[in-house]
Image (cartoon, rainbow, N blue to C red):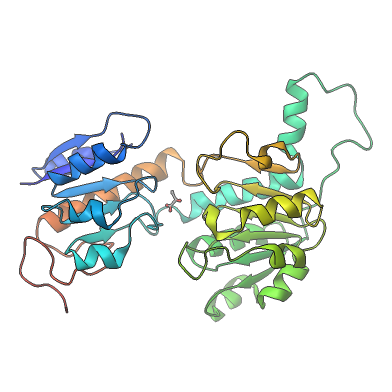
Length: 333
Ligand code: DGY
C-alpha cells in the first residue's frame, strides 16, 4: 500500500477514503502551504500527493520524487503543475472538474452584484459610522437587471454564470475558443468577437483556464475597449489579466470597477495599489469555498489517488504518462 502526502488539512472524507484503501496518509499540519524544502522532503517518500493550487510542483520537485505516481490537484485548474512534465516523468496529474462550477458561478455573480451595487463600499462605511441618513445621491450603482453581460470562456463555469444571468434578464454575449451552438440555443446567449463583447458589455466576467494562450489575455488594449461604466469580474486566475493595466484602467476611470477573487500574486501584498482604489472589491480566492463543494473536491481528489495506486486509470486525468510509474507501459510514448 502507498504513502500519500496531503499538502493541507482538507474537508470531507478525503483522508478517510485514502486510509480505507489501505494507504498511509501524512497531512501537512500548517495553515500555510508547505515550504519548498518540506514539500521536497515529503514528496521524496510519497507514492501520491494531494495538492492545492498554491503548491507549485515544478520539474525539479517532481524529478526528486522517485516513487511519486500521481499528483492529484484539489482544484479544477492545474496551472501549478505542468501536465506534460509530469507525463514525461511517468506521473499522472488529475483535477476536480464538474463539482465546483455552480459554486464558482455563485461567487462570480455575488461579486458582480456586490460591485454593481457598491455593497462592500457602503458596508465598510456603515461599520465606520458613516450612515448619517438616507441619501438620494449616495452609493448610486448600476442595475444588473436587463444589463449586458460579456462572458469570456464558455466552459462549465461560464455556462453556469450565463444561467444565473438569464434570471436577471441580461443580454448575454460570450467569447470562447469554440462556438457553443448548443448553449446558444439553450440559454439564448450570443457569440461575439472579443472586440464586440468588450465594447458592448456592462459587466465582463472571465472564465478561462490559465494557459500560455490566456496569460495576460486582458490588458491595456482590452480595458481600453470596455465601456466607462463596465465592471470587470475575475474568478479565473490573476495572471489572465495584466494587473498593472487594470490598476491604470481603474485609476483613469476607463472602466467603472472591478471585482476580483484572484490576483497576481496571491495573496496580494497589502501595500498593493489595488487596495487603495474604492471601486475594487477583492476576495481571497474563495470562489469554490462552500462546505459541500470543497468536501466533494477533496473526495474526488482522494479517489483519483486511490485509482492510480490501484493500477487504474484515474477518473479525472489531465495527462497521460508515457509510461506510468509502478505499472507496465500504459500509453503511447
Ligand atoms: C480551482 O479549482 O481551480 C480554483 O481556483 C480553486 O477552487
